[in-house]
Length: 424
Image 1 (spheres, rainbow, N blue to C red):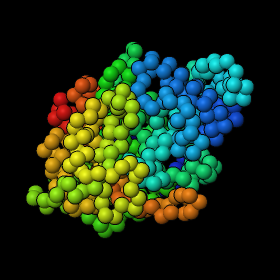
Image 2: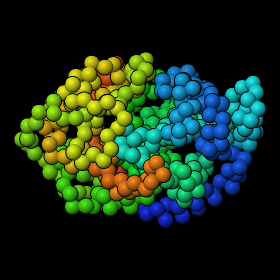
Image 3: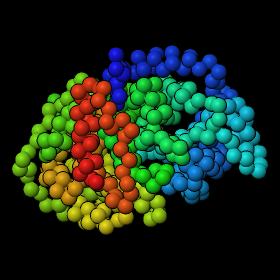
Image 4: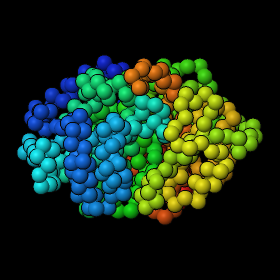
């Protein structure tokens, strides 16, 4: 039997917890007290945690690393405000070194550890969404799999209550390129997220320039606190609107692959014309122009049914689209609400300007605790249209030519091949 390449069939929360708990038993040497540092422990020594994180990532990526990891004072404030969370794992000796550094604030010694960070992604997605990122490991003779499984279990079982209450979804964009002698690829991390964690696959995100100066076709995945939040939302009898037939088929295939169910998708050869100046929008981008060249920026179109507008300043679509084209970013992205019929003409406009639909964030019916109050979340499905910079070579997924997969996965890879040819 051929194993799924992109994602396993949907399973409910209880089954996920049971399966992951059994999987964790395969690593009897892992002990969370000896091999793991939680984000709560890191918060108690935020500046030291930031210092160690950056040095691990610089070591892993051979100083070829370009994300928002350098401004310790500002990032420490984010940690104390619970907008950023850092974890570490490794063997007991290295974990003890880190704990001593946290407590004593003594001379820094780079521990050989793995790390990952969760960052609030409310502005780009919805309230209750965080991005798992800043991941890498210099740990020797220590597998990261049990620590990753343990961390996900902590989230699903409400063991880390503050994370469970604050976030309904973690998004992540794991690497997919071939490994070479000098550059790590995505083979190992893919096995963890596809086979072990079984996160949901929702397309690709060529959003970041990675080690070696390559703009990688990263997978776009989600880990949900309760996958039924997505199932309930996606099965509502509400049509989605996608102007281009190939893009509509791609989205339908993503839904079928995840849940064996697809919503009604309405396409339109002649979408209604709207005044782009009257469409409210905001921009998400790094304020550091040096970092922006290696990262994506997202233009967000707002709809009347948006529950919350992000902190970013609001402007008009046409004004911000011109700015988006002018800016020197690694990938230009536009987020649209797929339930908004009026956005069909924007989709057509984006297609004409070279943007293509590469990933979606599916709808959710969920909740979070926000400012001490329970808040109901009704996130619509979001589509992300991307146009990578031509300043960097594209690195396709290492499995792009895989033929030993089912028809749904093959349809996705064929779609992506055509997109890569279009970009090149």
